[in-house]
Image 1 (cartoon, rainbow, N blue to C red):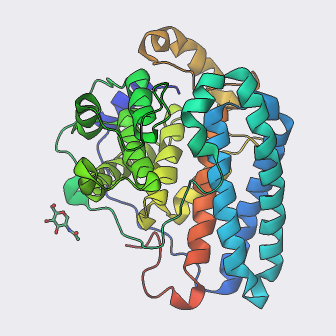
Image 2: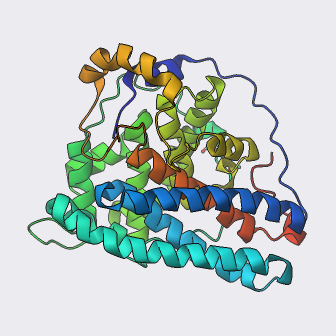
Length: 354
Ligand SMILES: *[C@@H]1O[C@H](CO)[C@@H](O)[C@H](O)[C@H]1NC(C)=O
């Protein structure tokens, strides 16, 4: 998982502009069906990419598509009941079925390429693990840290070790919901940013999926609110620097994770438009061709700034396994919230509105 060291720093130093007003979501069934059609076409192409590179996609990539499959199943059910949306529902059903078959096959390849990592994170690629939100909230801007640590001190090894403890998948086959003093400090440390911050949220999100509610996990909701407020702040900064390439990955990861956490304000129509515009002709998401020179120039510096990259897989044509995974799960979230807010209820609390 690449850590865009310099860009992260730029992000944090960027002045935060006044928030541009959000485009309203369409409130007719036809309008929503149009947007849903666009998202589905993008997801069809991304699934085609998955099929083409199935043997090369790493576990993090598979997790993104696993989340997407859960989202699609739920959307299909919601839309099957509306005659106007039935054709879309059938399209969603077909894609979900295709994905389920591909995901089953992908486990075979993961066993070959990285059996230890697969064993430790097996629960996250298992059907039924990911549960979608049914209650929605907005992030609370007063929880944004006054200052953040400019240095990204994120350690992927530490984070993985804490996640394994939580999932109970370590070699000592302990119980799930484990939390050492180290992990408690690591995962609740204030003032973090970037991938450190998103992994703190991931930790408490996985705790929720595992049903951990005892001890420190009684405070889970507090930490989820805190981290997503700061992830929202980061996404607004990414937007302010027009999503300079290395920030796109964390931008989409934040939408994927906080969307799963139930924060509807991550589903802004203009953010959806931005993500859709980043898809590459191969169906994947990754490094745009124009960024190649910049990327070469900063490669030397990044060599020192980058953290462990076991989770990232960059293909030679610019496609990124991690980018594609966060993109499809974010896009699936946009579809899911469209289905969760039937048009006649849109006056209640339109997603992305302010
Ligand atoms: C936002 O957080 C602050 C500080 O914790 C709290 O006082 C306030 O009530 C929260 N606002 C909402 C709308 O929850």
